[in-house]
Length: 449
Image (tube, rainbow, N blue to C red; front, side, top):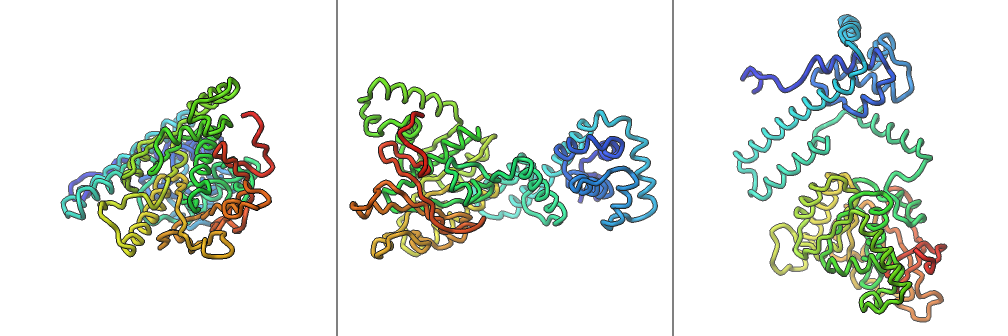
């Protein structure tokens, strides 16, 4: 269509040539360039092929100049004709200086953004004129496309495995340079981090338990730790408890002040000091709380798209969420399907936002009929496809809840029922009921914050 109208998609051939010419003239600028511009942002295919070749050579630590790049292009099968050699030489000649390479890269990136915006606008127009669904559905799709552009990503589309391998290799290099640490956000619980490798981007982490086991407390532990130590924005959607109740729990945990005392205000001078210190720490984080009990996944997704430094989403809890367009009494069959649909939407949301989504879930009473009351995957209420969508399923269990004669009534088990990153198994945590918090077993909970 563009060709028929005599129009070309936005691009800047001189800027693309100057970027590649700069990389050939001064290979020391390559790390800055590949951090600024990506392969698919080059409009001219030959320029994209050369950039890909240089990127791959840099990733594998190979020497880069016009001769080695030309030879590597032959190896990669993107050397088409003798004119390629002449083109490389011309690029080096017409590039005035490598000093301005980041300005050239910014032009390339801006033009690519305009092309993608134009494509998204066309797709949105087509969707509207074809009447593809309800207005709300089309608005959600349009927002998703624009959000993806803002995040520097495209929605869908086949991508060469070579590009994916390059990103994986870059991630491996980053992990090696950081001392082989966990790839995800730390939870503040070392044993859990070692097992699930932290809270990883694009993953759905399910925390499941019977009422009273501490699901909300553990989720708040994760939220406050990420907010304080990773310095990321944390979005908490509470469909059961109010903002004030959650904030009170955060204060109790961070200040190590008995939650009952905190609610009555009957605090000693030392406890007031702890509360003040905790309030200051929590206020310095960017934790956002929404306690609207009738939120849908689409509502949450729309709010999260507007947050710039989002690092984690916490939802309390799955079975209380509204399905899009719901508002009626559910039969068991329709409710099971609705919860399954919502779990799938949560997984899609995690991938789209590129952040971990921690969702709490109730377990059925099936475990209470068994002699061994430890949770199983099949105990998930209205499970449907929940266990399939989740990357990690963590169930909480305290023997002291059922057995008052237990040796340690506050010893809690975090049972990893599913783990895409490795083994399943059981971790021990210390449940501190007066502070509504969890600690590693070896950590003393009577230390000052």
